[in-house]
Figure (spheres, rainbow, N blue to C red):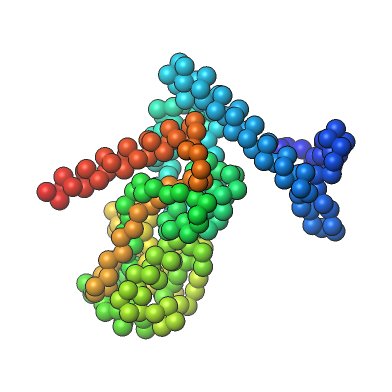
Amino acid sequence: MLYLTQPAVSLQIKVLEEDLGVQLFDRTGAHITLTAAGSVLLGYAQQVNALLAQTEHDIAALSGEHAGQLALGASTTIAQYVLPRLLGEFCREHPRVHPTLISGNTEQIVEAVKEQKIALGFIEGPARSRDVKTEAFLEDELVLIVSTAHEWAERKAVSCSELAAIPLLMRERGSGTRHVIEMALERLGVKRSSLHIVMELDSTEAIKSAVEAGLGIGFVSRWAIAKDLRLDHSFKIVDVEGLRIKRDFLVAYASGPEPLGLAIEFRRFLLARAGMQRASVRAKRS
């Protein structure tokens, strides 16, 4: 990340420890952890970094522009299918903004928000942490897909009991998508233990590929298959009787003071776009 060799980094740490007169790291074998002094320094370093970012943003704002680094994280479905378009739109409006994006499952993104590694996180399920606040910014629906060669491909709907008996592909534990699916099925009396889960996969793309290969059926976001359906791809959506899995994509940020600088600008941008989308959906329904 720093384009420095490991010995060069070690030397700089040693000089920093000598300047401060304290040990910043405990080194035990292959393991390394922060000392109490190291934790204090890290906290202030994060504050300094945030202050520098805010300074850059406020100075740029004097000329009516936004500028600087914007650290984001998103769970995999949002990172692959939703954020690229929104980030592209935001960056066209603010060309001096330089976003970075990490991806992971919901638990991993919530943890990155708590540790202030990212300014904003975008997740598919509940944060389940008091240290993180969330707001809905986009509506989604999870649908069941099967291969065109599957025995259900020509059926409009199946029952919950049939679903429980068929080989099912699921996201990994810790995934927001999996949590939402399991909760929706349990409300219909389908327990997790009764599901015939044949494989756990760490991305929506992996589930789509496995469905196409005939390894089972799976639930995915409508956002993830919009392009595939337009291109007449090799799977179909099958309804499950009584089951409609609606959810909101959430923007997450650390509890406490409101996000500053570019983080709050991008959050406002997203919420404005979400409002436009909801208005569009209501207009179509009416």
